[in-house]
Length: 353
Image 1 (tube, one colour):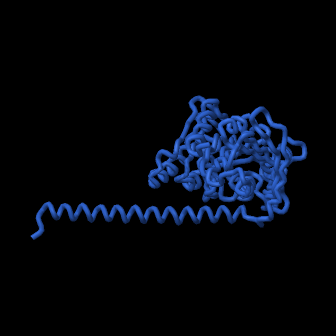
Image 2 (spheres, helix red, strand yellow):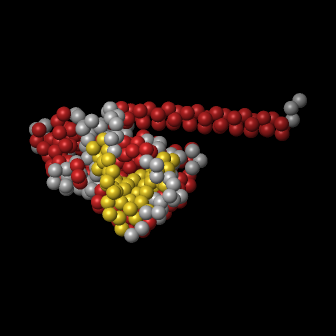
Image 3 (cartoon, rainbow, N blue to C red):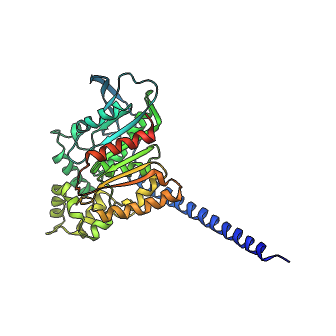
């Protein structure tokens, strides 16, 4: 006869096995979903991988830092220009941090951050996003960028808003992996506003990005569309959507038209590839999310909708210490000096220059 204590022990063991099997099944379901989402996104942005044909020109540095200008082929039609800053006395393979600018910015605007990172021992890199900086006719990018987004709406070709720059980042990683001074296992990515969105999208689909810090970019497009939070985001490409509405005979731009616009320009951005779906794909790699509590372009409720599944994914991966959500109090669409220092410290902690 089995004693009462033995029966209890058997039940406890059985329950533990059930919980373990459930956890394993849940993990497998998440893995399959993650694989499917990544594959679907990569299918949207995919194109022929032409030879990089990289060209590098050394520039005059400042003090203990060396600077160079480089370009590489992202595809058959686009070359990506970039700036690289590193310590003059850099020896061996070093960790890299890539910085992505926001709408209307350029790689030169990231130079103060690049120099700060290089001073900490990193190789620091910035590129011009599609139709920005050297990749625009006048250097500002405003007109070219809006024209390209409108062209994408009209033709369904190209994805100049976010997706094409994600592809460029992936090709940039291809280039960095070829360099003898780069440790390909220690590549970090930080971006601001538009660059922040590109950061979490790129990190979600490219596991070679070891550490990610999306700044004032994480958001739920679905939440914004359902709660009038889309208006501030649309302002960043207002000329393009105004012209698209005129093409479509729409007198007043509303959420329904914005959905149709997104379906052509950034398909899946408010459904399959929305922030709540993409952010968890970065787990268990270190992820620091920085947003303002009163940022109209990344409304806080939408940010929290992204953070919840991300935090759950890190918990399941037993990597809770690798995810941090930093909400800047009384702050709109900007990154405070304290948050920038926190971002640099995050890279120092996880990439160990």
